[in-house]
Length: 120
Length: 107
Image (tube, rainbow over all chains, first blue to last red; front, top):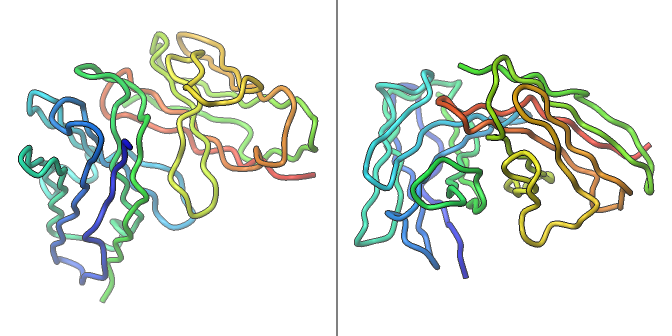
């Protein structure tokens, strides 16, 4: 079965760091473009970052310089390293897979989400 | 960044109704548009990609149309399980952007 399972969320103080993980099964993370999308409580969806199959990365302006997307091919796992966290980063974080390999496409597989709360 | 205007933000309808949700872009995106359905506490699910192609397993009462800057999601005969929030998303250029969402509620 093709699925994504996130972990690593929790409560962190402003200025702190957290690393989210997204374990994939049923497909190879390095073959598809993989993104992180977040949703603040009661709000809409916000795209955060993408990593291409070739390794290129892109970020939303709101997280550029603070967040880093990466993957471990041997573990078939996607990561999001989040530093200098702010209250406005509080959200459910989803990992998502582009439908087609090797090109931008819609997100056809989503994880269940992991909650990140930034608060003192 | 490409700005998206999704409307309406709230839609009240009854089972069996036909409803339409609109998404307008600040610039042309060809057909690089997707529609998602999200239910409370759940991850979004892909309904339509490439503006008008139905994702596998999605009921045929869902349809999408449009290209360039104006797009529409239509649900032809509402079922009880369709009451949810719907989002459009462009994947034409970074940063990818989502519409503000349309909450479809029971009248």
